[in-house]
Length: 355
Image (tube, rainbow, N blue to C red; front, side, top):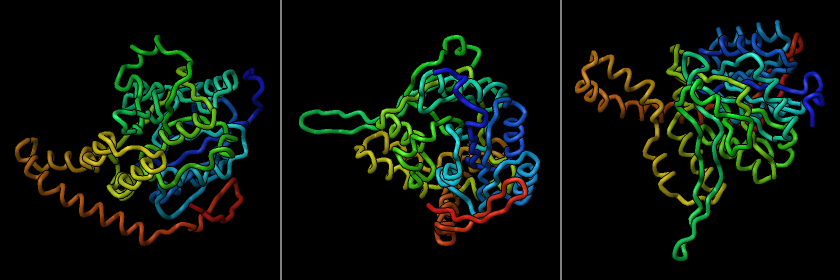
C-alpha cells in the first residue's frame, strides 16, 4: 500500500477531555498550528467551565469543526464514543485535550497505516514540560498470559510501557517504525472499520485501562498495532491549573470509577484477581493525593515534612469522604441518554448521548 492511496480528509480527529480543562487552548491551537495534513475535527466538550465552553464554541465557528457539548462531565470512553459515532472517515485519531503535537505528526501516522496496514498507530508520546523532551510511551505490551501450575490456571493481565521516563534525545536514534503491543489514548490513530468488528469503546471502563482493553480487542480481532516515532506528541498532565478543574478531576480519578473499571477489566477478560489488581486497589486515589492532597499538606506545613505528614492524616480521610460525595452526587444526578447539542459551522442540532 502507498500513502498516496489516502484522499483529502480521510482522517477525523476526536478530541476528548482527559482530566482537566485548563490546557484546552494550548492543545487545540497546537493541532491547528502543526497539522498540515487535511483532517476533520470533532471536539467533545463534557461540562467544561463557561469560559472554556465559549472558547471552543468560538473556535468551532472559526475553524468549521463539530462541537459536541454536554452540560455534565463525561468519562473518557463515553466522550470518545460520542465522537466516534459521528466519524465517517477511514481513520479516527483520538487525542486527549491536554496534548500538544509537533509538525508532521498526523502525516507520519497516516503514512505508517497506509504502508503497513496497521489497525492502530501510536506516535512517540512524551510527557510533562518542556514539551517533547521526555518519553511517556514508545509502544509496549498488552494481553492475557495464561499460567498453569499444579492444576491451577491463572490468567494474568499484561501491561507494559516501553521507554517511559527516558529522554527523547537519548532513545530517538534507537526507535523505528515497528509493530508493538500497546498504544495509549493520549494520542492514537485507529482504522474506523475495526469498530464494526469489536463494537464501540467500553464505557464501563470509566477511567483506567481503556487503552489496554482496546489493544487486546484489536489484537484478538486480527488487527495490528504499530509505533511510528516520526510522529511526536506530548501530553501535559495536571495538577489542575484552575479551581474550575477540581470537580472533574476529583470525579475522573475517583475511587469508585477506578474500582468499577478494574472490576470490569478483570471480569471481561476472565483475569485472576492477582497482585496486579491488588496493587491497583491499594493505590486507589493516588493521583488525587499526588496532585492535590500532598501539595496542600506541604503548603500548610511550610515545607516541614513531619508537620506535612500530620496534616496528611487529617486531609486524606477528608479527601476520601469528599470524593465519595462527588461521585455519588454525579451518579444520582446524571443518567445516560442525556440530550447534547452539536454545532458545526452555523448549523445547530440536538442529539442523544447514549451510553
